[in-house]
Amino acid sequence: MTNLNVALIGAPNSGKSSLFNTMTGSHQKVANYPGVTVERRSGEVDTEGGHKIKLIDLPGIYSLNDRSLDEKVSREVLTGEHAFEKQPDVLVCVINASNIRVHLRLVLELKSLGLPMIVALNMHDLATRDGIEIDTARLSEELGMPVFTTVAVRKSGIARLVEYLNRDADAYEKPTGSVTDTSTRALQKEAGRISKVATVKEGGHHKMTRALDKVLLNPVLGPLVFFAMLFFMFQAVFSWAGAPMDMIEEVFGVIGEAVGENIPPGIFQSFIQDGLIAGVGSVLVFLPQIIILFTFILILEASGYMARAAFIMDKLMAKVGLNGRAFIPLLSSFACAIPGIMATRTIANHRDRITTIMIAPLMTCSARLPVYTLLIAAFIPNDTVMGYFGLQGVVFFCLYLAGIVSAIIVAAVMKKTITKGTLQPFLMELPKYQLPRFSHVFLELWQRVRAFLRRAGTIILYAAIALWALTLYPKAPENATEADIYYSFAGLIGRGLQTIFAPLGFNWEISIALVPGMAAREVAVSALGTVYALQGDEEQVAESLATVLQSAWPLSTALAFLVWFIYAPQCLATLATARRETNSWGWTAFMTGYLFGLAYLMSLIVNIAAKALMA
Image 1 (cartoon, rainbow, N blue to C red):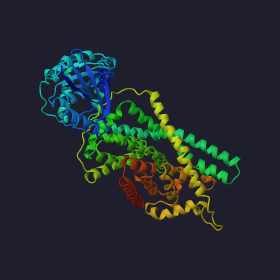
Image 2 (spheres, one colour):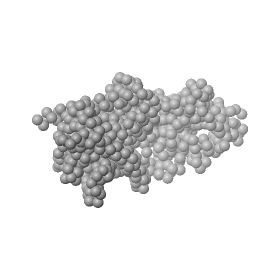
Image 3 (cartoon, rainbow, N blue to C red):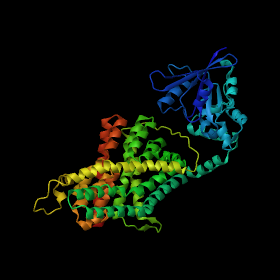
């Protein structure tokens, strides 16, 4: 009777930990590996033959190319390089029976270690439910090692597995056959071949997923479909939101008229009309467009397509030194840069993570949406392009595309200079396609809408009130030739900043709006609403902000202002999050400096070019 050292190893979501819990019951210990915060789970299994099996549940891995601390610990233990953990006598590789093609790649790579191995084909019940039938004898023959079907959560197949383990260490045979090429491509190809010959029946759902992937992950068709989806989404944002936006504007117009009729002229009426309605109301009008945009994104996420989008982007990201893993945080940044920056924690390579954090603010977050839509509605005619596409939607799509292309260029420059390093492989398990559950989509959508409304009721409201207060004093002199706001504290700040921003075509009203815009990007819209409401006559105040801007700004200024918002880091919360996640004032200063520099340079170029073209 000997003590056998057995390691459970497998990819995340293979059911490995459930198998460990079922086999060890209460006879398990949980601690950290010495010197690191990686959890070490071990337990004992007493067999009927009197053997005592020491079972170790190693952290989940997709390959032996470790990209995180967890994966490093697993690799070191499996290869016998770990300082405190003995190399296992036997490996039990747990794979998900409903997705064996992905999991077999790890089995083949582990086979190259030359250790005795057993495959636990886990979650067999779920595979059967999906109509998948696997020939375990053929699978065992192809892999050259024993294969046992298990359902860990129901304790099915566990007794047969333990019975097989009931032997001395030297009684195990090493896997037959050899793995000569351990490159990722070769392992994937062989895993696909074995999966094909061992799968008797694939199941309708699985077959549909594979058929869709042939198109959606095709190297040529995949990117075309991806960008076509984005293009349609941005067209829809403009085409479908018009009517509800008009309704919201009418509601605020009616409220403004009621305030004018029922509240005597004075500071309180100005507070309601110029501070609240012109400030907060000018941002809330964009709520329909935000709802449409996030509905599309949530449906794509729930259907399983977004993981494919990361896969499609992997090749493009690889050209700039990053991998598809960086695309997920960048995708999150389309909602808000803050969760996007926090999501970079999944990127193990420090240089890749820093690069992704630095470019995350270039992704067009929802806070820019009111600025983009306001200026596009004001300055871009609602014409069609090629008879089908709305010009406003095309411009909107181009603004998003400009952020993506700029992020790729910045990442390429960084990866060739200050964050230079080797390219990390990208491995990701793709979920099955499924119809979105609309109750979940609605719940997620409501959370985002509530977050927008909360910002409108807090940050945007406070900024609008603060700006309105700055416009009250000092009062205009008796012989004033300009509106009162021109002589106020806000006017003084705007005129002071105008000396810096004049080359971009920005007037003092725009310069005022840039300051509260540092709190949140959409506050710039409310600030413009307040500033122009306070210097206009009654007829002008009654007009929409888009109409007012149309008569107040030249096209070159509007285009430069749009470009400014592609690049400039107007959100202090984003910078604070970058400081926390990088733990470096240096990287935070770098992000702030390069974004401001890029915003100024690109806006200057656009302003000069637009003036030259219109001359």
